[in-house]
Image (cartoon, rainbow, N blue to C red; front, side, top):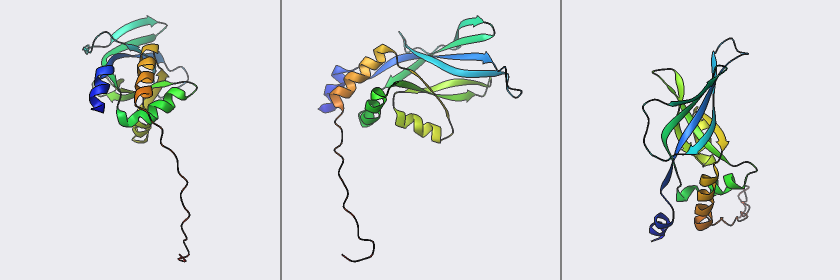
Length: 165
């Protein structure tokens, strides 16, 4: 019944688009361009565009908008969402993988869970942290307030390692 209540109050996911910036690498002799994620915007559609939309092209700096991504909240990640929202600068985490066809990084997952982002980092993936848009922040905050109950920490009893019980 708890899950039914949640799905009635909160949308399952929010469609988002990721904005990546490509700029010339001025101080590197090994790479020509540096890619960074610069933002996440709430999208009006779940539709994936075949090609990323190029937003800007000045001074060899390009902004590419990749659509068709979603932010989904899960009950078992509430603790991570809570700590993300309570941090001095809450973030959306964008996991990026290299596209083998054009050798450019492409967003793979957008998450609000620090734990999920950290797991991808440990697995060798590239992860960018960008500011959370206000709409997603409010949606996540309402979800956490409705579903998060902090675990009460308990002190463990000491174990006698010498064998004397």
